[in-house]
Image 1 (tube, rainbow, N blue to C red):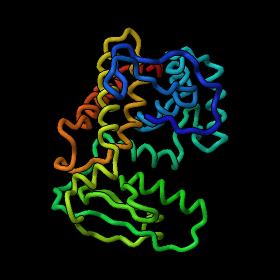
Image 2: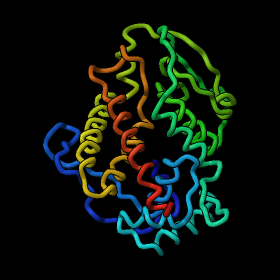
Image 3: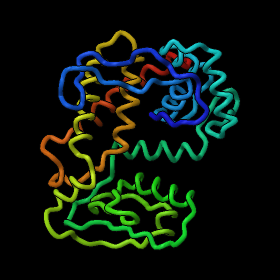
Length: 273
């Protein structure tokens, strides 16, 4: 699921905090979740559906779970087609190629492809001079998708434990090296990523998904699941020996997978099948 931004409807101001969760400091409180607009609901539904294509009536009925009027969903669909996010074929709406790539990244975040780690690190050093702002932005986005962290301006690295292709922008702008850091690699990992902060939010989301599983309607669980998948996209997926104890990444993936199975079983009812 995703909350990709573009043309937006007015924000939904309904309270979507989840009772029983705690804040990032571990104190009692509530997990503040980003509200899902009509556009967010459509994208989240299609990004989580395989193949990513549904009739308008299904998207309208999913929107109704959030109290979103049919007209609001249909306006969002029209705007998304105009913006190039969706294409319409025979009464159904499907993701365009750009968002299909986003779906692939989300699928990968749920089941990252890893390999045995021998202690080596991937290192990317920018070698292109006088890059335009769009080129710099494209590289930064590519590096985030590759789950690399920036040590300093123009130098990116991570443990070499992931299996994934490198986009052309990363190959064109960078020289790629392998090496091993001096000193404690776990300390370097903690410097590159806010591991404690990521873990704290992952635990909040896992608890919220557990709490929402018993709710009468799926809307609350849908909202928490969308936030969970966004968070999984930022998991550095480090080797176990570089992570703090009881790393919650696998647990959050397990809970999201359970939601996805339940939602896919529910969706035919809203599609009118």
